[in-house]
Length: 272
Image (tube, rainbow, N blue to C red):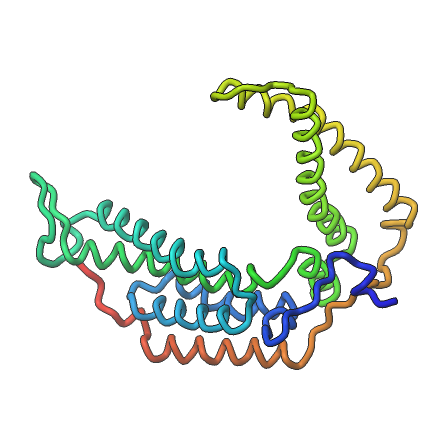
């Protein structure tokens, strides 16, 4: 029987969605240099180009769900616009040249301030879009396994983090069970904020008790498997680094370098 059948965390990559077949570290290493450079970019064209690149990769290589499409085409643009407008309102008009677009009393919103704010919003949106390349196609356990296998992170640290990842769905399941039990018994019924506070307060103690029991079981299971007794361990589920991972990283770096060379955002004159 294969590991993909034994391990419930191992998921089969959707056909035609190449990002799921890549090593998690490759999907992190590829956009990180561009994300760091974008922190210091001050123009609009450079982050907009990286947004287009990130969207192209995500749409071609990720599973297109309703939530992902909503985030890409509604949440991210609206968030960038809100951040850009907020930064434009905070910008000192005296340090941003350009004609006044809006004047209220002694305060004016200039074209330069609006461009600075929009550049900030688009830059943050580009960083988030690049992070989605790994974020929407990588699960926590595979990331931990790749760090242990490729980066040589001590397995004592890596698999402790893996156990923490697996606590999250367990807590969700136990919270659902506690809610159903309270609903059956009619505990903390009613409507309004005080009833909601009473219900959530009633979830805390049984949820903590369940968490302690689960932690004890995990600790006993790890101790029974001699966790930490040896400097290394055999891997049940391998996350190898393949040639396609190297090609993806190098190709992404090459495209990023071409974008930066073409626009060279540091050459743009600063508003003063």
